[in-house]
Structures are given as structure tokens and as C-alpha cells.
Image: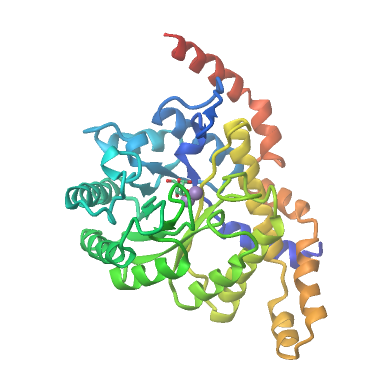
Length: 389
Ligand code: AFD
Ligand code: MN
Ligand code: MN
């Protein structure tokens, strides 16, 4: 890497922040069972302490997304949770309501034919918006498991109308600085239709809901071989890209660690964003958030691995020569245009990452430094004892 490239990467890394997810630090599993880890977080203070470690070693994860039912005990003062976060050097990021676990949601939340369930879900989302205001969070991140499992079970158009109605009511409660991000997912847990099944449905609902509603792209929520960066480019051009839930997948919504299966895809997503920023002369404000569930990897190590991979891929995308690319695209010189991306992707950006970390007084390799800190062994012992009480 030459000096110019080192500068470019350093500048890009200065702007790159990615949010960890509280739920990624606790024990998790699949519908086939959970496998427990001594060092897994037991409660929200543990999760925030672990998130604090990730930020301390990587320097780019100052906020933590929370899941309302899993992180806030009923009636607990949200400000107390925000104080615990601050103690660990992080702050609360996106607020994730939970309208998919209560029995009332068996046939959906905003799309449920029973008005009492729709009302309960709307109240929970409004309560989550108020929690966001209390902890000065700017994002309410909405994911709905709503859908049906058999043909004929649901009136799809009617459910769409109920969603429009409830989303508008929730949107009215947003504070001046709050955004509502509407996430889509093609299937699971619904296996015939999911009410917000793709980016187009999320886009239509966001546009109808109001100016503070935007689309949330979860990289695991697409059919095999779907071109996610094309969706990202369209949403950027429409100023409707609110943010991402990053993870990786081999088959479906596998929630594997970012870049573990297809790093080139994440690079192409970052490239579309940086190319947009270059052409529009303004970087869009997008929430980069991690949403993954490390079923067998040690929780904190997996998160640090993910964050290091995200930084590395963002750094590579920052090396794309946009000026040259634009000329080659207009001339339809597809081999040379592709080579511009490939050269950037295959550049070893480690020296630039190490230099950036040195500038920030961070260890050259955050994963090794975390391992040497002994934090994981210490909390494993302490949490194991707590579980045995
Ligand atoms: C599950 C859903 C969705 C949601 C996340 C957090 O598939 O991605 O964002 O849980 O609620 O992964
Ligand atoms: Mn998600
Ligand atoms: Mn998911």
C-alpha cells in the first residue's frame, strides 16, 4: 500500500462505526436446542460489559442495540440501563421491540386479525419509542415475524392495510430525532407468506408511514443469490436506506459471523455506499448494526472477529478508485472496471488497519489482545458461580 492508500483507509476507518447487539452476548441456540457457555452474559449489565470490551479493543463500537423484552425488566427505569452502558464506555443504540414471542402474536402483531393483538403490539412499539427517548437512542428497529403458514389462511391485502394503520400510529409518536427502521425477511418463522417479505414491501410501507421511516436491510434476509448490493444502490438513490443488520449465511437466515461465508458480498455493499458518497459528494447517514447469533463460537471473540472483518472490508472498499471506475463504466470497459473492484478487494489492508489502531492507541490485533486480557476466563468463573447459586 502506498501513502495515498494508507491515508484513504485511515480516513475511512475514522468514519466507520458499527453497533453490536446485546442479544449476541447471551446464550442462544436454534429451535433444536441451546448450548450453554460459562462466559455467556446472564443479564443486561453483563451484555453491556461485554459490549464494552468489544468497543475497548476495536475502537469502533460505541453503541449497543437492545431488545426491549430481553434487556428491560418490566417497570425498570431505562435510564438505569443507560447508566450501566456508560460505565462500560458504550451507549444504547437501536431499540428492538419484541412483537413475536407473546402468545397474543400467534397469528401476528400489526397484521393480526384480532384487534386486541394489534393494539397490544402497537402499545409495545409505542412503549419502545418512549424507552428510546429516555435513553437518547435515535433508532427504533422494527422486525415483524407476521405472516401465515398455509395458502388461504390469511387475507394478505387486509394485513397490509393493518400494517399501514399501525405503523402510521407508531410513527406519530417518534421524537424529533428518532427514526423507525422497517426490516424485511422473506420467510421464517412464517413459511407461506411473511407480511413484510422483501425490500419492496418495506419500501412501500416506509413511504406510506412517514418521513422518519426507512428500510432496514438484514444481509441474511434474502433468497439465495439475490443481489443485495443492487437493493442497497436503489435504496441509497431513493434516500430510503436506514441501515443494516449484518451477518452471514450459507443457506438462510443463519446469523453467522459477518464475512465468514462471502466477504466479497459485504465488500460490494460497502462499495455501493462509498461510490454513492463519492458521486453525491455526501456520505449518507446509515446505521451499521450487527445482528448475529454465535451459537457455538465464544460470544465476545465472535463479535470482535465480526467487527475486525467489517473494518477490513470497509477499508478495502475505500481503496476503490471511483474516478477511474466511473470513466471505465461510461466506456463499458467491463474487464478493467471489474479489475478496479478486484484490485481493491485483494489488497492486504492489514498495514493500514495496524497503523490506524496505533493512532487510536489500540492493540494491532484486537482479538489476540482480548484473549490475552483474561476477561473471558474471569467472567466465565464469576458467571458460572452465579448460575450455580
Ligand atoms: C431475528 C430476526 C431479525 C431480527 C432479529 C432481532 O430474523 O433479523 O432483526 O431477530 O430481533 O434474527
Ligand atoms: Mn435482523
Ligand atoms: Mn434475522
